[in-house]
Image (tube, rainbow, N blue to C red; front, side):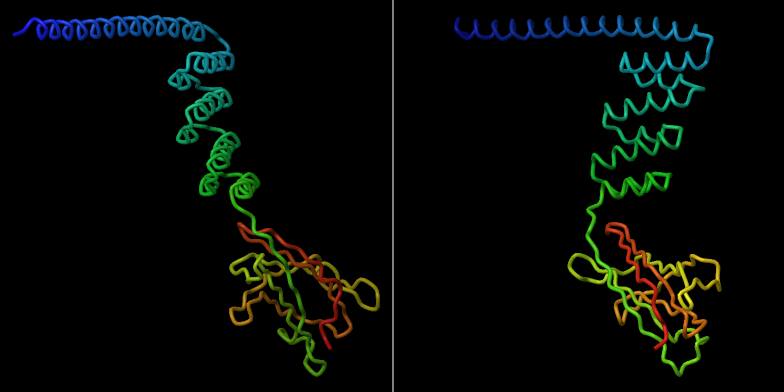
Length: 261
């Protein structure tokens, strides 16, 4: 073996030895830091345990968990649900961990957790996990592209010679259209009768307002309802509401109309 080759081998061994030594030093330092941190956590946690007031104790655990970045301390919170929820919500947001939403106890806080992740991830499927109806609707509005809509309405009046008490002699129809003028199917379309008039005066035959669900006609591509007529002289005052998830809700006042020609 030449002297040059021998020197190279010795240098390589020296480099490996130095690397191992430095690694051991760092590991010892990290271990010592972890031990010191563990001691500090135990010390602070013990201070919380010595608090008699349950609410103050739980708030103490929450502060320690957040300060020491130790989620396991959240589990020590037993009575003050708001403190526990804030603890888990902090780590859910910090670690981008949606699974922690399940650990949240109070409904409004759990809903907020799912709402936040749904908004950030633009994931409307997360809205299904929300309990509160208003928050769920807000979630869908925030995560779904809303398509503009229009309403077209019309009336096919009953013929004079038909019996006014015959259901189906008049038809009110509504087209709920998207921004490309396509008919929107499987929507909720409500026809509301809000007033009846006879000779310019309010006519009270039923308790108003009265709402009716409209049905969809595949043949005509519209929603329709056939009301029962009480008199040829009565004016019926209607308005229509239409809505479907992902589409802009629509409303139109039909005014007071005569349903018999």
